[in-house]
Length: 404
Image (cartoon, rainbow, N blue to C red; front, side, top):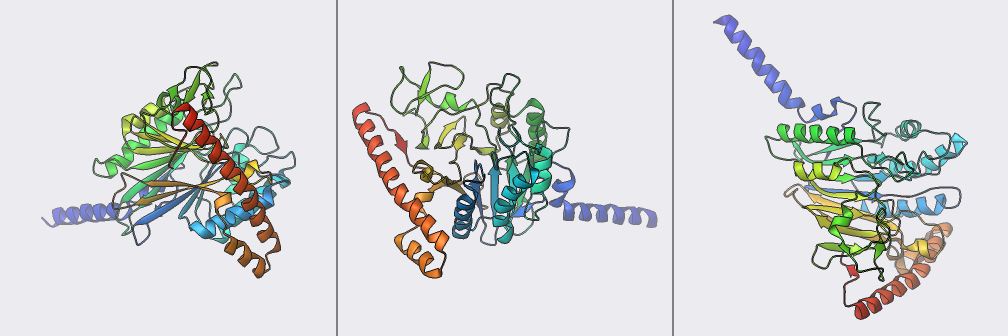
């Protein structure tokens, strides 16, 4: 009887220990990042930064604007989804661009998740693995090199724990959508990455008592199913765009679908499809997929219960067109993780006249001049674009732009 009691106590201690580490157990492999947590008010905010394309010509302006956005939005996580910096033949130059970007997040202690696009390792001295290792020299980085067992570099998940620390309440998927296929076309998430996702999704569900852990997914290249949610046009029309694969076919918003934002260019998906989107429909945990790659698209469509969303390029090149660029903000409430809110912020809407004057009076000579440049150029671009869309809408009889 005494031995039985000892064994029972031992079993109970193991159960208690397992319960205590269950939340952190997801960080036991190289594809699950250290867990983050909802704030005390039950909120969690993500900033989507993509296609910064930092190089010698735009790095200072882009980084200054990103810093301003971070100070304004105060995100709990920044997700950077590829085509991040120009990969130079001199690795020291590439690292300098990374330093300027990551220092923004490091100085503000913002957890930052990084993955890659088609251009990150297209040229230059540093491989994807080299780049990831350097990003991870920053303590704010929660990024992971998933290792040789999975295609690409930078496929992982980030659990988000409830504000009371009791359970994994939400999840963030980060995928490397790779660079190019064997024929030189844009890449896609590969079959082994899809299998990893399915297994990890099942693990999260099992640990959550059989209930799915809702999530958002981030990657560089949009999935080809975006065309299934758009409407095939009768030939080329204004604000319709040619299919990336099926040349001569044009697509636009389907008025009978659920749409948001503005479609400004062809959605450039990969040519190959290894079932990523279908797997997410099957598992039922992904609320939305967020991509970059197509710099001026800031739109979303709903297909089979999942929002397929493109965010703006987060850089500033100094020309009028680049003032359209910006970032996306996503907010999740732990009281109902089955939904989220999304909004796009353009650089040209960031500063008021008062903000610019405050910057000038503060002595930030570079900042107030850049803010004035962005706002001035953006004013004309914004209202010219709105006018064009209104005219097209009147004459075509269809809606061109939706609320985002």
